[in-house]
Length: 471
Image: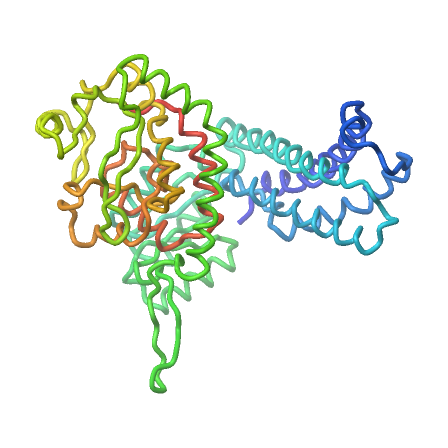
């Protein structure tokens, strides 16, 4: 059920979007008159501001309609701002394409490609910024005034329910307040809690619930404007494909969408993205290489053997952040000694459970190495691994053979797709997650891959890339 404050913000958002789109159009018109742009691109067409504003007034309602169709006016306080921003980009881009097609068909309507391009860029920026400000205001009212908080009733009694309770308890900004937790889906018990505290949403995590009980509960929620959600079993969340075999219906569980065109799209995204990122980060990479060389000499790049998809071994490139005599190269006598020292450190100082290790206060780091490892700069050379086809921008992290030998059999599902530089685990808790939690996030990614999900993970990685890791 949508809260009154959410309805208010949804209503306010429409005139705000209109204002931002008009402001973007006017800004593009003004920018076109700047001498520097006239020098670069002489004006081929002149048109009065009045005629331009009339054209803008005809276009704005179309953009608002596109935003509405994309669900951009369903401003729940529990929404994800990053998903909202991507929707703004896509909806504005759709509007741009339609305008370009219209101008192509009837050129006399409008002829300045410069204004159209600049207005599109500014509209995305202005609308996103305005929505961010509105989002922050909405969150402030939620956290400080309790406006828009969703009253949540949990049904079930297991580890998943406990995890939900813990997450909501630690993150008040999620917009939820738990009003109760009952073990069975009793309509009578739900009605009592609703009358006493109010209920906006129900989350069920009870695999024993019968179809009859579920239908009664769904009907009750619909009648009382309560959002009905449930945490499904593994089979319910799996992707499947129905077909007929010998006259009988048969369902095939699909392992991942990364087949066929999905695999091709991801490969194109990887190659394009890694090439662009190498250009963007090249100054940082050059400075890092220089700093390593000045402090300890070469080698600058450290190759660490990891296992990729289908059990294929390949060298992962990293900026060397350890003293060179302590690099674990099993092919040299010095490297073998370093490997024994690393095993000792793992036994004494590792703070992770399971197959993976994380050495606390690793004494092998150089001064430059400690800095670049803390801010993940050491991982930038892995963009070359992506270009070579050994890795992807997004995916499970590649692990060492000795770590994979400690996997349980079901953990080997992580080896069914290319490993990535970043992934679900990195944006959800970085190296501080325990392996089993990291595994669950990576399996979710494998089962639910989409190009949009890759873009979202890459954007969120930008925010956490240079944050300090916990020692």
